[in-house]
Amino acid sequence: MSSTREARARWSGLDYGLVLPSISRLPFSLGQRLARSRGLMNASQGRDWAELATGQSYIAQRTRHAYSQIWPDMDADELVKQRYATASLEELEALWIANGRFAHRKLDLEPVRDLLSQRPPGRGLVVLTAHFDSFILGMLGLGLCGATTHVMTSAVVEDERVPPAVQAHFARKYREAGRYLKGGGFWHVETAGRRFHRALQRGEVVVVVADAPAAGPDAPGVWVPWFGAERRLAEGALRLARSTRSAMAALLTVGAGGDAQHWLCHGPLNPWGLPNEAANSGEAEYRALFGFMEGVIRAHPGRWWGAHLLHDCPVRHTAA
Image (cartoon, rainbow, N blue to C red; front, side, top):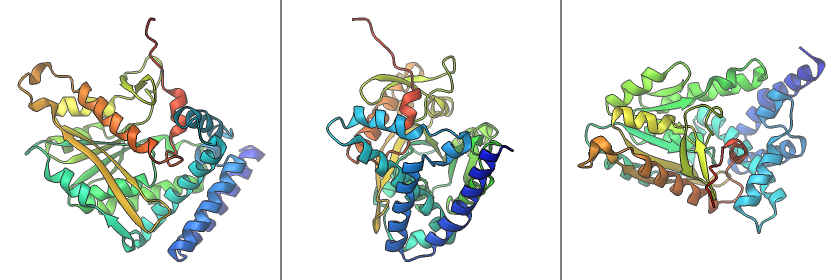
């Protein structure tokens, strides 16, 4: 291991192994303030976990460019700081979930109950979400409302370049949060594809973090209107819904850094129940769900900590 990589591992070991757990044991308001301060320090140093893994500070620059497109009249640098602060609050949330403290705040779960009550009988439900606010808590809302829920994750967090303390943080987050998913859990898409299909065929819920680009220029993807352009994003959620004839919905949560968490839902949409079921692709409904998520993100500047992903989404150029 190079000296630079060793330094990053030592720093992350201190941060994720001592600082963040210590903050999680403090009173809520103080813990939130310190988590924000931690995020601001990360912003100044380029210390998102992915940046620690690669040794490159690139997220702030890409986020600044994305925010400049979304909120051209706002200070993009200030929004970038908010992005890192929100990411830090999300990491704090993961530890609150692990120690059960998240339930001490007001959780406005009525929209989730309404969403689940409207599911077509016997159908699975594919739920789209994004790297936004306390998204880990957002997913748990489905389980807290009684739905057996399976969350699609990625093995990228286990890449050998990811510092050990960061890997341990993710492992604990998925393990402890999984206890609230009513028999479901967090599963890497690289190895658990069949698990998601079987869950949907049983009428259960699968959550997909859908704001990621297609894996490569030649990888399968779907074109959706996304922040001012037709962009090609990963098609995993739509493909799952098609193959299992599952309904689709979108879910985001807002409230990181406050004393209450609010769930925002759209759907369920069930394109397969139409008379022309065989010919329907579900893409119109899929695009509507992305439109909903974009609207929520635009209403809450700085909370989309996955904004840097916009850089890697191919744009479809139409002839003039």
